[in-house]
Amino acid sequence: MPLPYALIRPLLFSLDPETAHGLTLRGLRLLHQTGLSRLYARERIHDPVRLLGLSFPNRVGLAAGLDKNGQAIDALAAMGFGFIEVGTVTPRSQPGNARPRMFRLPQAQALINRMGFNNAGLDAFLHHVRHSRRELPLGLNIGKNASTPIEQALQDYALGLRAVYAHADYVTINVSSPNTHGLRALQTDAALEALLTGLASEREQLSQGQGKRVPMLVKVAPDLQPEQIAALADALLRHGIDGVIATNTTIARDAVATLPHAGESGGLSGAPLRQQSNRVIAQLRARLGPDYPIVGVGGIVREADAVEKIQAGANLVQLYTGLIYQGPELVSRCARALAKMTKPH
Image (tube, rainbow, N blue to C red):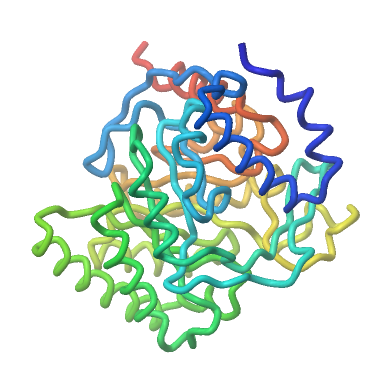
């Protein structure tokens, strides 16, 4: 019988958010390794879907960012997810931005973070990935080092793609974090064109060399204007990118302007992001057509939010901040709601 999250949350919320985050990951990993995952594990809802050439047990996945180094893949999978995404990983280890860099906004069920792709680098990341049991589709999310000039970003992404390709069920190209200086410029026309041209070519070589074609997705920001969304969608189609993840965190603060910590720089996630994310999903769906894979993420803190993502045009959804506020039970609740929604009547 799993422990109710309501008993654990006050303890976690008494700690600094980043401290609580690290403690939770280490704790989950330890519980799983010692055979005590039943203390937090949840039922995996059976709602199979085929997408990106992969079989997903259900439509609810873990978003990148929670497990940047891939150190708790199996432990997190026990929460009932249909797929797991880990990272963002950069070619070289980097500390990220100065602390404090993560802030809770409990009144809004939101977080602000400016972590800055803090991670242990590709070698440590791949060590963890190789030692995971891989029971579910696994997405590996790659980015560029902060010290790499934006003009040389393709080199970092290509290096990341080559390193993770053999180990990934799909690869996510993260060009939308607001916490690495200049990164979001890679979503604009000329920069995006150059990046996707280079990565499509790199993927083609890897596909031929390894005898398998790993799906490649791009993760986009919620702060794009309609014309930018249209141009980005057209570029995804033109370069044979297999799917899009919508969305990353937002730099907007309208929904939380009066709350403590609202003035902190970084990306806002959680409930206030829901409508922005849904808007981008709907616009992407309209531009990309009915069959293009879209993963919806941003603002899912209850079952109805996950249902809204599918109604807006997503095929799959991902959680992160909602887990912080609602706990592991949110996974099965959302998966159950989506199974009911998509089941033939």
